[in-house]
Image 1 (tube, rainbow, N blue to C red):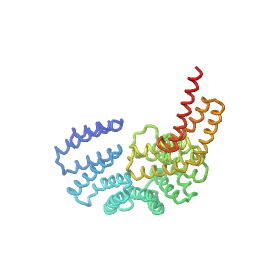
Image 2: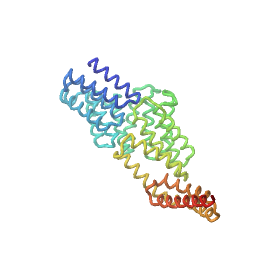
Image 3: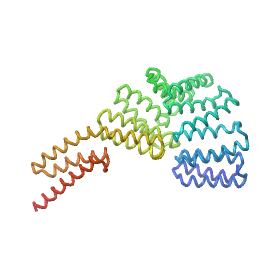
Image 4: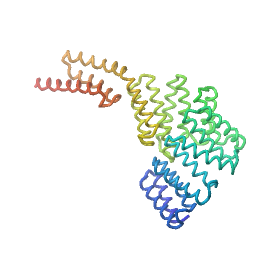
Length: 387
């Protein structure tokens, strides 16, 4: 490739890794423009550069721009190299992964299956690159709640890896964890625990205590504990996942951000089961914030989480009324005693909970705000009268 084009690409990656995302995109576009000028549009090296940029854009959450670059690269490769060239595999897999991030699982599977066809014809079923594609396909099945099919694929992949890789290879830890998550989706508790422990042991040994992969490891174990009703232990696992997930890592946003959002979501569920409403609203708020930032408001997963959160808030109205009535009744007692300052404080506790759980626009919050304003007016009148 062109030295000048490579230089801009390298500068863009440096900006990307240091959080200067807009500048990174500018550098990448300059790199691409130079390469096209030197080699023409229909060149395999231009296609390779488009794939690099497409992956970078995906890591920034620029999904539409990412898919445009990746599909443009695929078009060049098919035109120049043919439809069955092994060079297409890398591009097809990244298109499949991008559609997976967008929640478009049918499109994702279509591209992964096409990549697999080429790999089976050129590499065979027992090649590690082929196994990697099978693993991605199994993950898509999991996202569609087809855990049985995912389990079958993960088992086949693990069997091949055990034949090829040394016993302590880190990829085996990934395979154990993937299989464990598919088993967990089917409530196969005993084998799930075995797989997850083997995965965690491998990750800690090879990558240390702060590797991004541990976010998913701790979530899987925490979810299992949550299902067994061991909420205190589950809470510790989720907090550990969040601690690692919110630390600074040189990795893409989706690789660690989406699991971390999931950890917040699980933590919120644990708080809700313990009637810790204030803790719940903070945790679920962090989860939604991350989903919206990483996926956007229109993403199916974000929409699903927002709908579930709204339904949960509706279910909280009863408990909220009980909580509020305690403080409102005490405020009324203080009012009768002429202790307006104390009445304002107690009513303020009720209002604060309404606003945090239901939002300012909810009718119950509006009513609470009206009452609180009246208390404040009475307090001002009392103070003015005493002067």
